[in-house]
Image 1 (cartoon, rainbow, N blue to C red):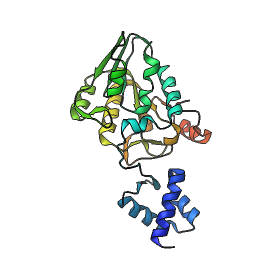
Image 2: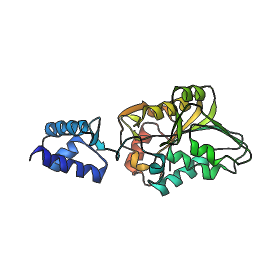
Image 3: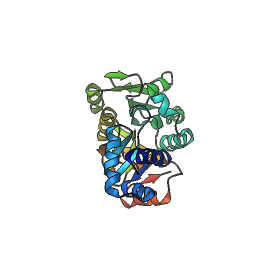
Image 4: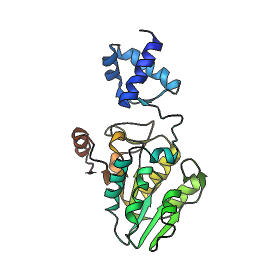
Length: 252
């Protein structure tokens, strides 16, 4: 089997399964792991997939920095479930961080009656959601505006966030695994989330089950950083058990 044929089959596998280990791909295609590793690296160089530690994952369409509107439309029901669970942890009088993740944004629909409340965020949609809500004060980080992600990023935004303290931080992630912790496509977004986590007493990661067990290319935080993972009911019991075995509290 030549490279072009292997290439097509590997990409079809990742379309179906999102991410796989080298040995899993090798077994499915009946090809040596050495050949698969070489193929995966070549496909990564062609930007057709993302190489992970021990395997590969499907490349995001077009560009890893997906527009907020595109992310918002993915796994809608699961994200809404996660947003409701996360909002239930917020109490009147709290000060909270909310990053620009689309799953974090789903909390907004459930926060409007929890007053008084102070929110520190870099998300333009979060800020807009509470524009006219009495009793909710929004502190929007200053910095460079990213129109596609509808967020404020950059060193100034990070410095702004680091000048505040919150009881709880609600952050998103592009991937989460027992081996590599929290991973992201974007250094700018990871920097914001890390800053929020470092300035909060409790850190809650909002992540739908499709991202759990997957790794992106940038490792930005260990699992020990988080107070709890908030996910949906579709998380396989085996994955939940692995996370709990590492001391991660799982809320679903």
